[in-house]
Length: 122
Image 1 (tube, helix red, strand yellow):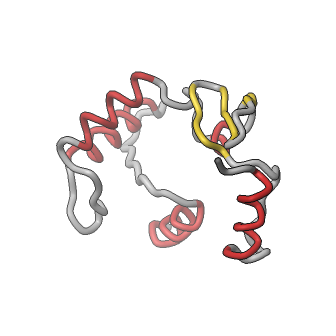
Image 2 (cartoon, rainbow, N blue to C red):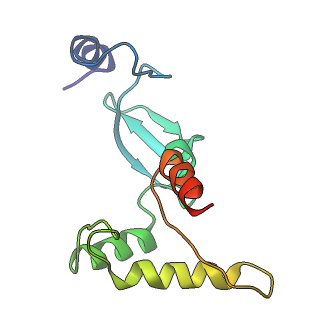
Protein backbone atom coordinates (compact mmCIF):
# COMPACT_ATOMS: atom_id res chain seq x y z
CA UNK A 1 0.00 0.00 0.00
CA UNK A 2 1.20 3.49 -0.84
CA UNK A 3 1.44 6.03 1.95
CA UNK A 4 1.41 9.79 1.64
CA UNK A 5 4.96 9.92 3.04
CA UNK A 6 6.27 7.32 0.57
CA UNK A 7 4.65 9.11 -2.34
CA UNK A 8 5.99 12.44 -1.11
CA UNK A 9 9.50 10.98 -1.18
CA UNK A 10 8.94 9.74 -4.72
CA UNK A 11 7.65 13.19 -5.62
CA UNK A 12 10.80 14.85 -4.26
CA UNK A 13 12.90 12.47 -6.36
CA UNK A 14 10.91 12.83 -9.58
CA UNK A 15 9.28 16.29 -9.68
CA UNK A 16 11.09 19.67 -9.61
CA UNK A 17 10.61 21.91 -6.56
CA UNK A 18 9.02 24.59 -8.73
CA UNK A 19 5.87 22.47 -9.00
CA UNK A 20 3.93 23.40 -5.87
CA UNK A 21 1.81 21.13 -3.71
CA UNK A 22 -0.35 22.70 -1.02
CA UNK A 23 -1.18 19.57 0.96
CA UNK A 24 1.13 16.61 1.62
CA UNK A 25 -1.53 14.07 0.68
CA UNK A 26 -2.15 12.05 -2.47
CA UNK A 27 -5.67 11.47 -3.74
CA UNK A 28 -6.73 7.88 -4.43
CA UNK A 29 -10.34 8.44 -5.44
CA UNK A 30 -13.15 10.98 -5.24
CA UNK A 31 -16.92 11.10 -5.35
CA UNK A 32 -19.20 14.15 -5.20
CA UNK A 33 -17.54 16.58 -2.76
CA UNK A 34 -15.41 13.95 -0.99
CA UNK A 35 -11.85 12.84 -1.69
CA UNK A 36 -10.00 9.89 -0.15
CA UNK A 37 -6.23 9.80 0.14
CA UNK A 38 -4.03 6.76 -0.46
CA UNK A 39 -4.26 5.91 3.25
CA UNK A 40 -8.07 5.82 3.19
CA UNK A 41 -8.67 9.14 4.98
CA UNK A 42 -11.68 11.12 3.78
CA UNK A 43 -11.63 14.86 3.05
CA UNK A 44 -14.12 17.45 1.84
CA UNK A 45 -12.95 18.89 -1.47
CA UNK A 46 -13.35 22.63 -0.98
CA UNK A 47 -11.13 23.33 -4.01
CA UNK A 48 -13.36 21.47 -6.47
CA UNK A 49 -10.44 20.42 -8.64
CA UNK A 50 -9.14 24.02 -8.73
CA UNK A 51 -12.67 25.34 -9.17
CA UNK A 52 -13.59 23.31 -12.27
CA UNK A 53 -15.77 20.66 -10.61
CA UNK A 54 -18.94 22.58 -9.82
CA UNK A 55 -20.92 19.34 -9.98
CA UNK A 56 -18.46 17.42 -7.80
CA UNK A 57 -16.46 14.32 -8.62
CA UNK A 58 -18.15 11.56 -10.66
CA UNK A 59 -21.50 13.30 -11.09
CA UNK A 60 -23.66 10.70 -12.89
CA UNK A 61 -24.77 13.17 -15.58
CA UNK A 62 -21.20 14.17 -16.35
CA UNK A 63 -19.98 10.56 -16.36
CA UNK A 64 -22.80 9.60 -18.74
CA UNK A 65 -22.08 12.50 -21.10
CA UNK A 66 -18.34 11.76 -21.15
CA UNK A 67 -18.93 8.05 -21.79
CA UNK A 68 -21.30 8.84 -24.65
CA UNK A 69 -18.81 11.28 -26.21
CA UNK A 70 -15.88 8.86 -25.84
CA UNK A 71 -17.84 6.28 -27.83
CA UNK A 72 -17.95 8.79 -30.71
CA UNK A 73 -14.73 10.82 -30.58
CA UNK A 74 -12.12 11.23 -27.84
CA UNK A 75 -10.43 14.48 -28.81
CA UNK A 76 -9.44 16.68 -31.68
CA UNK A 77 -8.32 20.27 -31.82
CA UNK A 78 -11.19 22.27 -33.34
CA UNK A 79 -8.75 24.44 -35.29
CA UNK A 80 -7.31 21.29 -36.94
CA UNK A 81 -10.39 19.08 -37.31
CA UNK A 82 -13.71 20.71 -36.43
CA UNK A 83 -16.62 18.87 -34.79
CA UNK A 84 -20.32 19.70 -34.35
CA UNK A 85 -20.59 19.66 -30.51
CA UNK A 86 -18.13 22.60 -30.39
CA UNK A 87 -20.49 24.59 -32.63
CA UNK A 88 -23.54 23.52 -30.61
CA UNK A 89 -21.97 24.70 -27.34
CA UNK A 90 -20.88 28.01 -28.89
CA UNK A 91 -24.39 28.58 -30.23
CA UNK A 92 -25.91 27.75 -26.84
CA UNK A 93 -23.56 30.14 -25.05
CA UNK A 94 -24.22 32.88 -27.62
CA UNK A 95 -27.96 32.59 -26.93
CA UNK A 96 -27.34 33.21 -23.21
CA UNK A 97 -25.59 36.55 -23.75
CA UNK A 98 -28.06 39.44 -23.44
CA UNK A 99 -28.32 42.14 -26.08
CA UNK A 100 -29.45 42.55 -29.65
CA UNK A 101 -26.15 42.13 -31.50
CA UNK A 102 -24.15 39.32 -33.07
CA UNK A 103 -22.39 37.10 -30.56
CA UNK A 104 -19.49 34.70 -31.05
CA UNK A 105 -17.82 32.29 -28.63
CA UNK A 106 -14.30 30.89 -28.52
CA UNK A 107 -13.61 27.84 -26.36
CA UNK A 108 -10.07 27.47 -25.00
CA UNK A 109 -8.36 25.51 -22.26
CA UNK A 110 -6.11 28.06 -20.57
CA UNK A 111 -5.91 31.71 -19.68
CA UNK A 112 -2.89 32.04 -21.98
CA UNK A 113 -4.95 30.84 -24.94
CA UNK A 114 -7.75 33.22 -24.00
CA UNK A 115 -5.40 36.23 -23.87
CA UNK A 116 -3.60 35.23 -27.08
CA UNK A 117 -6.87 34.90 -28.97
CA UNK A 118 -8.30 38.10 -27.49
CA UNK A 119 -5.27 39.96 -28.84
CA UNK A 120 -5.67 38.30 -32.26
CA UNK A 121 -9.38 39.10 -32.39
CA UNK A 122 -8.91 42.71 -31.27
